[in-house]
Amino acid sequence: MVSIAILAGGQSKRMGQDKAFLQVGGKPVIERVLESVQSLTDDLFISTNTPNHYQQYGLRLVGDIYPDKAALGGLFTAIHAARHPHVLVVACDMPFLNADLLQYLITLADSADVVVPVINPPQPETMHAVYSKACLAPIEARLLKDRLKIIGFFEDVEVRTIERSDIEKIDPHLYAFVNMNTPEEWEQVQKIAKKI
Image (cartoon, rainbow, N blue to C red; front, side):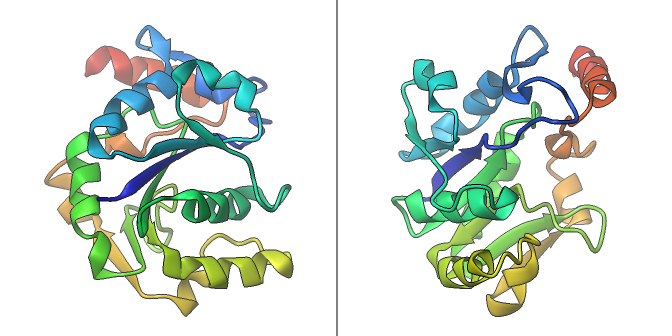
């Protein structure tokens, strides 16, 4: 069993409003994310520094252990808070998560310290990946030095990458990796929601 953390700590600066509550296909993105993951774990929680926004979902809410350390700080908090040895981390602004694909990543959790898809090499999809507790010490060392590049710690752990061709067998259009950081991207997401 793997814990699942939804990272909802971003400041949504480019969007200009909280991305998690933007409507896609008639419901807030955060609710679409929750629907995709809740059957996959007995330990689902939200990593957020604005817990009052998410109280209505009745989930465990955890705030950053190291505030103001960007996505790497959120990732550290998620791994630290997980009740299982591995945690699947997803972002709150991914409206088309694919439960079958997530389950596939979960089945590979024991094979490495990080199990991460790579859709557009060399950039891994770090907000759609499984991490083990072994990542905590290497991440913390970087947080303390303000070295916040999210993949910086990969050199200190065992990483298993999942190739695009394997992912396309489950999610041919790669919709699971669509996210939205700008109003223009939100518009594109609305169009996809009408198609699928």
